[in-house]
Length: 260
Length: 361
Image (cartoon, each protein chain N blue to C red):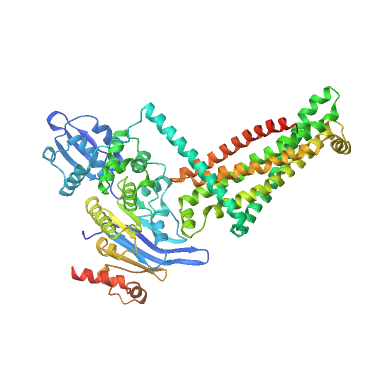
């Protein structure tokens, strides 16, 4: 890691409300280039909401979001589009377009970005397909005929279509079997190393947190309580954090980590 | 974006062709042009940034054999190039197009399967109807009332208005012709017979197919995709009893009522035009109506209504139940349900005409 780390995401005094219900208040969070951050917290603490605010899909009710060092409220329309293209988002259910094949799904953002010849487009899309570990024959399949694991990989492939430096993932391993989830985590690590990515993932999967992330941001009491590596997080004495990591499964994951 | 972007370029000639700039997604277009130039590059100078998309196009210029790669990149960039090289692959063949004969076979296969599905649907519904007679408690009263309200009551304004306008237009056009013969009074027969026998049930069916039939198809298609239909089955419930039967009974109940409504408002529209354009007062109109219009015409129109309702519910629900795939399938099935049900309604209407002509009604 270099000394002067560049910030990728900087949230200042963020507030989010749904009517009377306050989700975030005075929330601060800074994420540096190259980090692999997990957003963790109990249900209803607004993890996914926070993710969609970082992805500029939802406006916070107050506060400032800086992406790549620029406050997003100061961006013009064109800059906003450019900034969006620097963020890849993987949705929880994949959100692949059901009327397009996997290949066409990956090609769509590139195609809209620049007019390229069909062969180059297809090659670029195939590269993304391979990078995410999908078999070649998946290219011409429609999303509804993919298995859960393949669907998630295809969603990552589409998110990576424009080579964004920042990749957001909403519950990437939810609904996968343990082996599939582990393989998916491995793929994320490989991509992170190879493509200089910054990863932000919302997840409940403790195995995922241990293997993939180097920082964990814990959401509770309407803000980010702490951001620290998981090894320190599990020893944190804050009552909310303690309860979260106190259950059986969490302990098992910790034991495993200590054995390794 | 702190640093300035450098457009990729190739310069020099002969043995000293050099390449520079950012090879990133932002410049894909320029890179594609450069890659198709076909110049052999000897030196890589000042390659700013490199991402996978750019790397793929750079590989098209410098070749995919690492031994041929010119110098000038950082270790990381060579690593990325190597990764992209190892993962680059041509698009696999998609399914080959079928020959004419095979395509015909596929179509026939599809058609027979569709026919079977139709039969299946009708069969399941019939079985359920029979069992309903024995166990009337299977009927979901609340859902039935829902249908009565949404597809009956809420359709009243639009159907009344359209039938009224239709009656007025027919009286106006017909009246113009009749007036040239001085046969103004016959406008009563004209408007009454047309509305009672044909147009009232037809306009009702068309509006209901567009309003409710399409809604049924979209609702069931979405539920099918959401696995809600399977969920009902897994709970030991008959999906037909929940989703189809209330609609069927409900619509068969309200369609005759809506038809009567459109008969009344249609004739009302005709009456209004007659009194304005043909000097035929409403009192005369009603007297003439009572004297010449046989009640059989009313029954002929009314008997069609439940049959049309049966068609609309069947087509709408079947299209919904058969939906597979994604969002597009929902739209496709909804369109088909409307087109098919209106088509069938008109065909059956024609059959009715033949039948009634034979019976002499």
